[in-house]
Image (cartoon, rainbow, N blue to C red; front, side, top):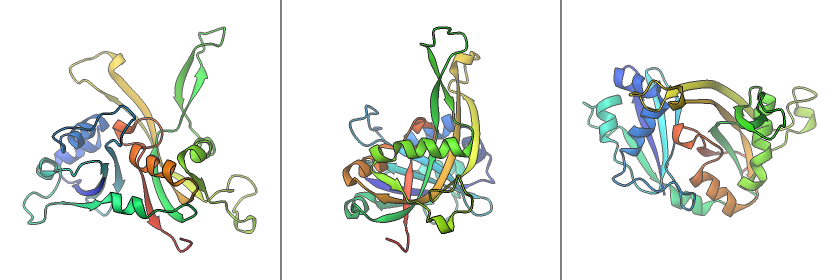
Length: 241
């Protein structure tokens, strides 16, 4: 497994096209590998996420079973005339092997929190459709509902440190809520080819409860929309760990 950070030059038109279309970015990430891993759920997959960074830059993070070659992205969306390659790749498996149950980490997760509701046209209430969670409270609730199966628990906020009587029980915040709508095929004008999703970013602190399940979360992703920049969780040390 590998973790890669690529520096995106947002001043370039090619970079702006990629940042404006998760479908194009998905294709550009896949082009970094001669053979993309199968997405059948049995093995690790390619995950990616874009984080805002310093002025005129954004950071593309990629977790992948194989080492990527991002030369094409440097030419399209980086700084091609610099001597440095434009990206850094780390041996991620070594980090995953060092993780232990009970350790506490800061985390960032960009995800697509969704739930199913009954279709208005269905009087019997048997047909449902997928829709996005809108409020931070429901988005955090979506994450809390998945934490046990994903091998972690969000650290609880001590009562004396809670900012409000309700809604700050856990050490996690939601930001960068971004509704997205884009077309998977630019040669088609059919609305059937439109993709709609809402990406949000969670920042907080977690404690590992099930090491095997948690490693799977880090390498397989969490939630829907993984092809479009959702599902990738990254960690950083905290004083508690």
